[in-house]
Amino acid sequence: MTASALDDVATVSAWLADRLAEDGIEYALSGALALAVHGVPRMTNDVDVSVFAPQDALESLFDALERAGCIFRRDHARSDAGRMALFRVLLGRVSVDVFLAFPPHGPAAMQRRVKVAGPDGVERWYSSAEDLAVHKLALFRDRDRDDLAHLFAAQGERLDLGYVRRWVEALTEPGDPRRAELESLAARFVTSASPER
Image (cartoon, rainbow, N blue to C red; front, side):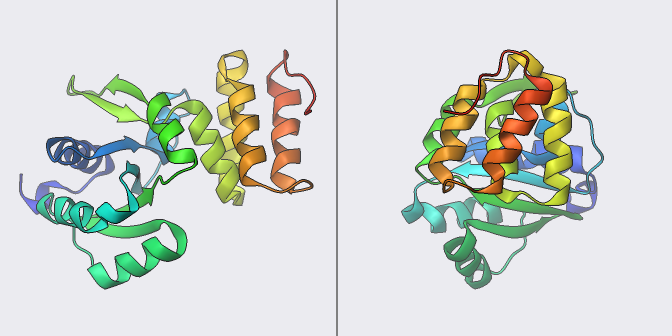
């Protein structure tokens, strides 16, 4: 495929997922793409992908991304990865945010990811609804809060609230507003939700 053909989110996400899989790199498509899989369609101009790779395998990940056609500066990516476990690349005409899913949460998120067939019939990995909720609560921007409300409304009782609570509690301090946000969402959309312990 030529770079000129990589001009939309659906094509780029499928291409990148397939190239990562070919290189044996564990991944999950996330962000708006995963929201759509879990019943919340939303427009997006970029691709989010979580990569489950050890911290010492960063150069191998860079190699794989370059083989896939991604354009980025390794020194910038290395710096951003060390600072915030995230870096950005360009694939064709689409920006891709690469989230490094390190421990402690990464291994659990990898175990829970879901495989879903795309319009081309090929199955690819997506973040679970629960891990998407944890990720959105961690970022906690206005857009993430909107996405969370839609995700909880779409998932309702199917959401494993206990799992989300455990990770939010593990990743935040008591009194953190993200804990209160989770309980508010649970009260609104998960009728079997018990109060936070």
